[in-house]
Every structure is written in structure tokens, then in C-alpha cells.
Length: 256
Image 1 (cartoon, rainbow, N blue to C red):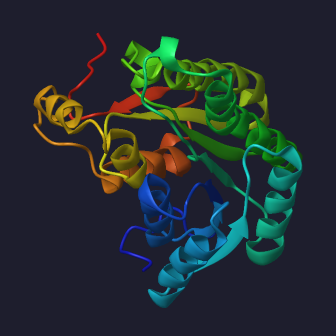
Image 2 (tube, rainbow, N blue to C red):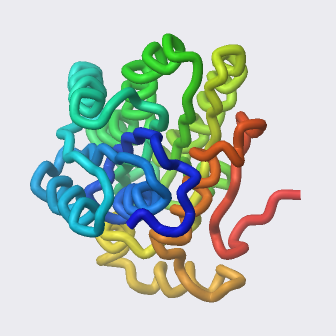
């Protein structure tokens, strides 16, 4: 690290929820392509481990505490990332959480947590970083939504709503920020092998098997499957792409 692909050399990125799972894979890929990466997560010890792994491989990284549900925490995380690594060029909104249950069995407490992490977290991180990007005349924002936000998902009503909101929000700020040379794009994973999915599905293994059967490629996604799409949107290769949604789901959903 860095790899032979260095299209992000000289760039500084911050990835929320980057201590493990999809966020970790994204952070590793961005570092492999030459970016300095802030590993932003509420789990500070795990974030430090990921940062150490990147540095041990010859990359540049720093662990930053981030509670995406709190705007002050987001502001502080962006400031610390810039002190440690330099001005931010790339924001990846990845942090997420869910609880699988029918909507009629869910509670307002669960709604609040799902909304706070999955949607308000994106608002907080964008609010904290966009003025910096505007002042510098450019930047890349990539938000991880979900195919659940495109087509719905049984047992994930509020989560699906949040992910749909991320898509609409991102398209709107893409329009608002195009004049500032800030690109905003969305990556939608299908079901992926992560600790989050295992936690959601631990009591419903039959649902997980049915999910696999419904995927044309006959397997769940891996965190690394998402990282390349994020790296593309974060790079100069995507300078003329904004407000776009790409599904990385093994063919589970296909838009016409």
C-alpha cells in the first residue's frame, strides 16, 4: 500500500463507520489508491486498529472518534482529521445500523435510533464538511445508501425510508453544490457479509438463505465489492458524475 493504482494520491478522505465491515474495506481501498484516510468511528479502539493496519502497509491514516448522531462530534471529527492529515477532499458517509422487525412491532425508540444513525448522521457529516469544500472550491461526497431505499425491504421499513432519504438528499445537494465543483454520488449495496447483517439476521437464518437464493450471483456481497465503486466516485474518473446512484448487489435489483 499504496497499490499500483494511485488515482487518489495527494487526496485526504474521511470515512464514517470505518472501523469494520464495509467502511473498513472502503478505507483500505482509498488508502491503497494513495489517499490519506481518517478512520472515523464511535468505536475508537477498532478505528485505531484499522488505522494501524493501513500505516503498517505503508499507507497514511488516522483514527478519529465520530458519533454521527451528534453534530458537534461531526464538527470535531472533521477538524481533527484535517489537523492530522490535511484538508479534506473526500467524505464517505458509511455509518449505519438496523434492526430487522415488522413495522407494526417496532417502537418509536427504535425509529429514533435508526433515523439518527442512518439519515441524521449523513446530514451531520455533510453539514460539517461541505463549507470546507466550498471554501476550497471542490470535493467528493459519496454516501452509502442501500437497495432497500430503492425497492423496499421487508422488516426494514424505517431503515429503507432512511436510505431512500439519503438518495433524495444526495441528489438535491448534488444540484446545489455542482457550482462549487463538489460531486455527490450514492452507492447502494445489496445484502453484504458484515457484522451488522449477522447481528440483524442471527435469529432468522432462513431469511438469510432465502436472500442468497434471490441474488442472481448466488452469494452475499463482500465489503470489498463496494469499495471499488466508492473509489471510482471519489476519483477524478468521476469528475463529470454527480447525483448518480449505482447498485452493487449481485443483480438482486436491476433498474431499467
